[in-house]
Amino acid sequence: MLWTYRAEDAEVLLAAMGSIATEATTATDILREEGIRAGVVGIRVYRPFPREEIRDVFGKAPAIVVFEKNISYGYEGALCADIKAALYGTGSRAPVHNFIAGLGGRDVKARELAEATRSSLAAIAAGNSERQTWLDCVTE
Image 1 (cartoon, rainbow, N blue to C red):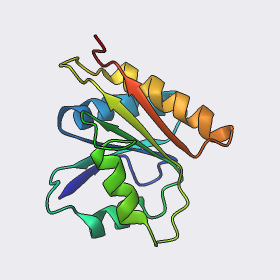
Image 2 (image 1 turned 45 degrees about the horizontal axis):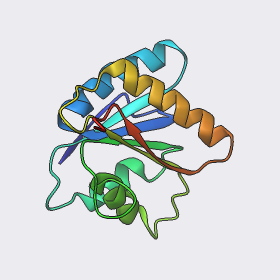
Image 3 (image 1 turned 60 degrees about the horizontal axis):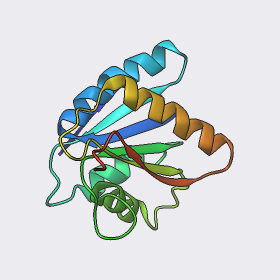
């Protein structure tokens, strides 16, 4: 249902599906070289949503950054909303930041994911526990 990469000791978990999850593994390596203990959780199956697996892997995560190529009705992407819903009631207090990335067919590169993660960690350190941001999307 999902896979992990370097997630065992991660201080921030990058969650994604498909090609963005693959790019996130390279971003994780970049961040690890800088001393940031990042890890990846790749979501293989979206429906039925892997609620128990999500709770197991994210339950004790210090911080979560979700990258996705979709936008749902409302405020954030569907994957982010479903991860938050799965964690609801578990006592998890991890800040969750959401990046809507690559809409309109843009490629999303590992260096962009690494920079977005650095930005999220700085925002978290400043007390911002929730954030939704657009990353490299066609806007015209």
